Length: 378
Image (cartoon, rainbow, N blue to C red):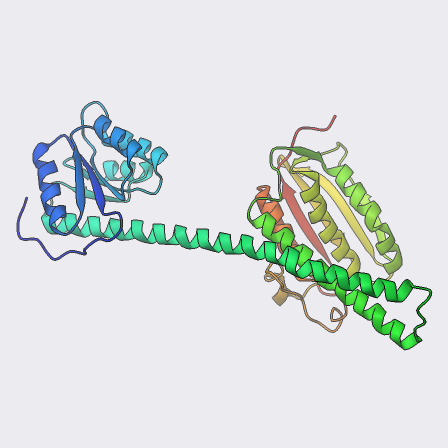
């Protein structure tokens, strides 16, 4: 097996390769071939010995024979995946068949090398596996750094931006309501507009913070069940004045049997508040908004249907993007952050549900949310 070796990549970082094979010559060959190009090779003659070592000190790569006494290669792969899912596993075997290759890949192997093989083939497949491991580690580090920066930025936003905004709002409130301060009507109009913009900016910050928490799994609780009808009734009650002011008729159509869904009340209220408030804001005076629930194939279905402006077809596929807003003459003056639907989608998917939209311009829009059923409400 050992012969002239093609030039190979010199590994950096954790360059350890663990080889498990009951063939002593194979162990010596792998150690010599891979050692020439910079790998540190640790060899074991049985699956049990190799697994004990991996449990103490996982490496970048594992090269394992499929046919071994006691613990075979497939069992080794399965247990290594439990110990360290990041390890790249390469299978070698003298019993090369399609079925064994498929079994190994299904068990978690990265690649497959039949015996006998040349040194060049071994180097090529190990280098390729090592590069995969290196890129995976790099990706994990970048992901961790990104999450750290996001946490730092959330902290910065919540304190450094919201604190002065609260102060500005307080000063404006004092100017508007202090009886000892006489202001001309024009000045009061400017202050009122400033209050509106401050409230709008505060809402954007709150939406962004909620979205950040949801994206990191810190907003939803999938361990509890919540009565969906109670949540809907609570949200509709709080948004009733907004609907009345807009001239929109709110109608509730509940399933015959009360439905419970997986998820906490706070997260579900956020979803419903966004969908219902949008159905009011983007409706027309004299229009209607229907909130209905049903059970479909063991999935709880929530629909929020309005008779409003509708959404252009070209815009519908981008509705759930961060900060995206439909820009038309009719929607130009309607306030919003462009984060509400993104937050809805993030929460629903965190709860292992789905959200979709169907809309027709000038006719209306229906948002459909499908959620997992919880403990049945008595």
